[in-house]
Amino acid sequence: MADTFDTVQLNNNSSKIIKIPKGYGHEATNGSIVELNINTPEEESSLFLELYDKPGAAEKVTKKTAKNFLKYTKKGRYDDTFFHRSVNDFVIQAGGFSTPKKNFLDGGQPNSIKTFSTLKNEPGNPNVTGSLAMAKLPGDPDSATSQWFINLTDNDFLNADNGGYTVFGTVLGNGMDLVDTMATSVVVPAANYYQNSALNELPLWEVNVGSQDGEDVADVRPQDFLTILNADKLGKNESLAHYDVSSSDPSLVSATIKKNKKITLQASNSKKGTAEITITATSRLDGETTQESFDVIIGSKRREHHSGKRQRINVYVDGGSLEAPYYNFFDAEGEQIDDLIINPQKKYTFRRLDGATSHRFTSQNLMFLVPAVLESDNGGLAVQRPALLAMSGSSCASAKRRVNGSPRKQDCATSAQRTHRCRRSWGSRAA
Image (cartoon, rainbow, N blue to C red; front, side, top):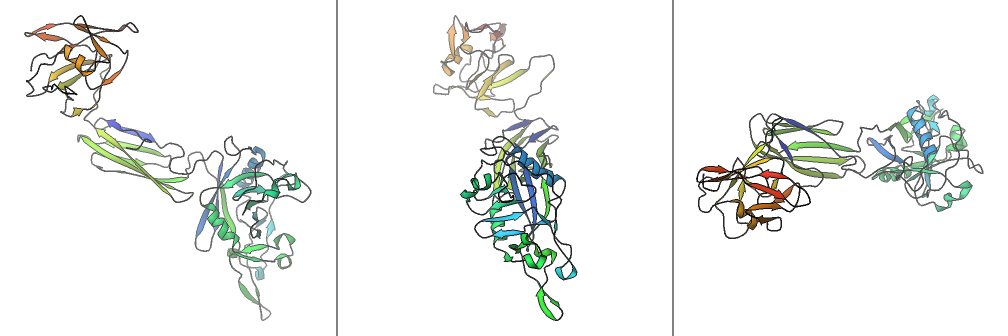
C-alpha cells in the first residue's frame, strides 16, 4: 500500500473523513497561484502562474510586486486584456490594454487599462525561461505599473539592464507549451493601424480580411486577439489537481469526495470485510495522473471501547510447535494476527484455539517467543521495555492462571526503568 494514506478500521454503520494532503497529485508550490484563462483558437486554456510572495517560492521574495499583480487581478483589471507584444526568442507581454468589443472596421479600438501607482524595483531573481517580470519605461527602474511579460528564453542581460527587471513569478507545469503556441502566432505591425506605437509587434491568432470601399483590408476581430478572458487567484480550498475516489466494494464501504478535498468513508450496517479505496489525482498543471490505494477494514479488527472500564481482549493460541514462531495467535473472528501489539493498560485473556490440545500454553512459554524482551523472574515475567511491545507473542497484561480448575493470581513486574504492576490469565489447559 502507498505511504500517503494509512489503513483505516471502522465499525459497522460508522464513518470517517480523510483529508487529502496539501500538494498531493501536482507540482509543489509555495507562493500564491493565479489562473489565466486564455482564448486559444481550439478551446479555452488555463495558464497557471506562481507568484514569489512567500518564503520558499524563490531565492528572493518579491512581496510588493506580487501584491501589486494580485491587486490588478482582484480588481478584475486583467480580465479581457490581451498580449499586445510578442518578440521571437525574447518575451511576450501583457497587462496594458483591454480587448476591443467590436471589429476594427466597426470602430473597435484597444483601450489602456486603468493603472495604480508605480512600483519600486525588486530585482534579484534571474530572468530565465518561463519567469514573469515587470515591464517598465527605459531609464527608469521604478516605473513599472500594470504591464508584465513572460521570458521566452534565458534573458540574462535583463538581470542588470535598467536596474534589473523584477522577476516576481513563474509559469507552472506544462504552461510554457501554451505560451510557445501564443508566441508563434501571427505578429503584425499594428502601430499605424491602431495609432499606438506599443502595438507594433501585435500577436494575433488570425488576420481577418474585410472590405472597405471595395478593397480588401485587415479587419481585426475581438476573437483574433490573444485575450486573457479571466485572471483569478486560487482560493485556499482550491486545488491544482482534480480528484476522484472509488471503492472496490461499495456495498461494504462507500467513498465520496467533496471540493474541499475531504474523503468521506461510510461503512456498511452489517457487512464485514476489507475494501480497497483508490484515489486518482489528475494535475491541472500538466495533466499527469497520480493513483494510490489504501485498505478500509470493516468490523474484523476493531473492538468496542467501554467508558470507565479497561477493555478485555480475547486472543486465541494454536497448539504450538518446537520451531519458530512456536505459537500462532488469532483474533475473535479466527483471523491470524501477524504482529500482536500488547498494551499494558488493557486486559488480555489467552484461550485455546478450537481443537488445539497438543501442547500447553503457559506463562513460561513466552520466554521462547521473545527472549530479548522477556525473561524469567522467579516464576514470573520481567518486561524489559515499558509501555507498548510489538511481537509475535504476548506481554504483561492482567490475567489469571488456572491450575486444576482453580484460579491463581500471578504478578508480573517491569524492569527498574519503570514500575508497572499487572496480572496475567493463561488458559494452561485446553478449553
